[in-house]
Length: 368
Ligand code: G4F
Image (cartoon, rainbow, N blue to C red; front, side, top):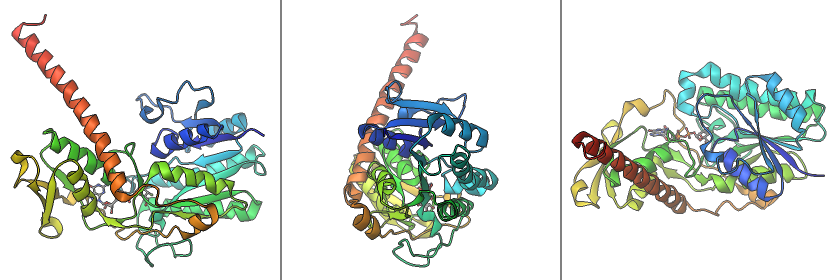
């Protein structure tokens, strides 16, 4: 039987990598995108037009749209990756976050039942290490108690439990991947890693003066998103439906991420001071930056409650799925992201120079 995957959140970092991965495995891939007047398809632009890649309009907030797409596509696997995924944003938009990240999961499960596919369609739910929140154990594994610590995490906890409930109540093959932070050159620019790599590239190229961050001591287990999508797929190929922690098993602070990112961009930072007064000062690199404060802490990026000690234990995924959590090291991940942003910023800088030159020429009457 041919494999047909349906991906919600297909335009995001994970959705785009998963699409590439499944296409390479011979799947027919269908993605759900929201109607919008702005173009947000950058991550999948290179896939559009491929014969096995199809897009459908739909929304996790609109159950009828889900029933229609699921009924039309008749997927053998669904990957529910769509979400309001920014933890800080969930404090400003808690109701929207609950609708998409909690009730949205229920809508996907119900769409599968409404279309009579509960025996043939396997469902992957994008769950999160944020469930461990105010952590009760370090490192965290599948048996660690949950303690969600943001509106986002509370909504995701509902998603996790409703998937488990449908598995037990209706015998559906649905499971959650409890993914720890996973990053890449396609990561959204407001998540801390990408914010840092873009800023490091801009500062190194003279296009930005300073980077403002929140809690520098926060600890995360950061992996490469491209490696993690393989595990999503492996979870659905398992003999029985089970939940898995996906992590590298290695932990670093935001401060360390910033240190390595700037270093790779040719700037060595020394961190001095504490809490709100901590600063990252340039001690080696381009002459014009030496002695300058390039990183400062701002209250704006602190959260009402922050999760500060995430560290995953991927033992179960290694043993049962044969997944390799050490494919891309922390240093390699930082390098991939900085290299990509250095190139992006250089291209932006060159385009800006062309625009500025043109404006100057027009002003001087050299070009008419
Ligand atoms: O990069 P972050 O915004 O990611 P966060 O909150 O860990 O959430 C991400 O990973 C989760 C998996 O564990 C996903 F479920 C979730 O959808 C998302 O993808 O923040 C990481 C840490 C936090 O402790 C934050 O307080 O970095 C700290 N931080 C310090 N300065 C900052 C900043 N975070 C952001 N976004 N921006 C800052 O300036």
